[in-house]
Length: 126
Image 1: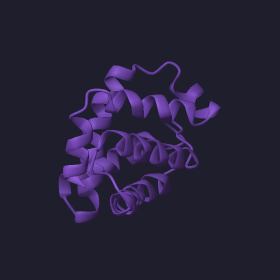
Image 2 (image 1 turned 90 degrees about the vertical axis):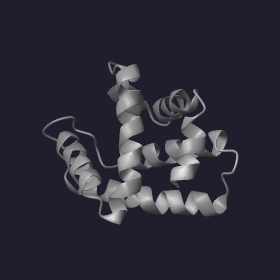
Image 3 (image 1 turned 90 degrees about the horizontal axis):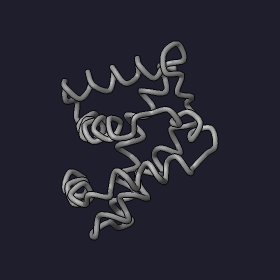
Image 4 (image 1 turned 180 degrees about the horizontal axis):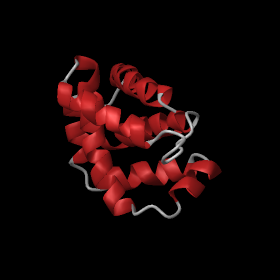
């Protein structure tokens, strides 16, 4: 998956495409992101995806990073509703499939499994 992400992120448009897909995935998501500085958010996303990849491996830095996301995304702070995460996952997978020339069904399943583990942890903190 790190290679898949490397292939996708090397394409300059990957993060732009992710946010385009994510914002169009739901009117609620679009409203939530309306006042967001997307350039700053893209930098955070790039780092967060790396942490998501490392999270299931028990990497301490990744676990701490995902824990901070969990805390910041709870209802008392950013109020990111758990149902938004499926839009996030689907947008990420779609952007990866468009920008990783080697993307296939096996990578799709692997990405979804790893991402879901981190997302479940984050959503439990809502």
